[in-house]
Length: 250
Ligand code: 8X3
Image 1 (spheres, rainbow, N blue to C red):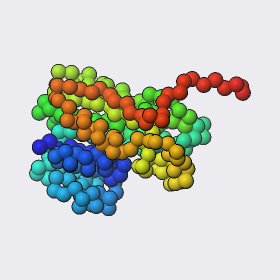
Image 2: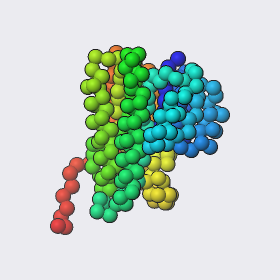
Image 3: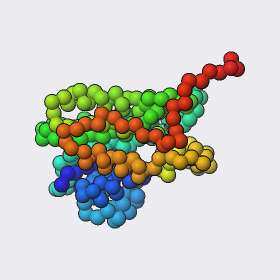
């Protein structure tokens, strides 16, 4: 039975991924900052689920916890770098600089550290799979996407470069790039708890859901080991890159 580590497991994509992969028969380590949420997930998911309380930005704490995993969960076959966030939607000249730093710390440095820590074991066993949660924001610019989109462009290129470094090894890497996804805390976090603003993003739109992403990841991990999906971009039918715009007012 393969073991999966999912970061950002307490809500949204992470929670849905844990639920789906447990149902698929995997052992799942769910890592997140919020212990109470992890505990209720553990009660729901049973003995094949191991809750781990850590913040991906706290390097030493992550190292200590990963070095003392219980028997049965020590060999991580699949790493799902899901922890990440968007903060703010202001243009670059008005954005909060600490928001930028937090996004870089979580979306880039947290993912880098988990990958660098877990990848050598996969290489030793010549077996493994890393799935990174990128975003369409890493490909398509939009107003206020500045640093968030740039962190996801990093995820995209890092994933591609991992494939190159792993050439000739039986280790797979996929960058999953979701578009507009509702029913999660993503926009509530982005708007710093302004729930009315967050709800407005999804009003009258058929968005994709965390379950859609979890089902995609379930499909990915169950594809045959000789096959690598380099990247997969998923938008709701209601969303599309709608062409270049020209401002007539300038
Ligand atoms: C989430 C998708 O379009 O809100 O990364 O940036 S989007």
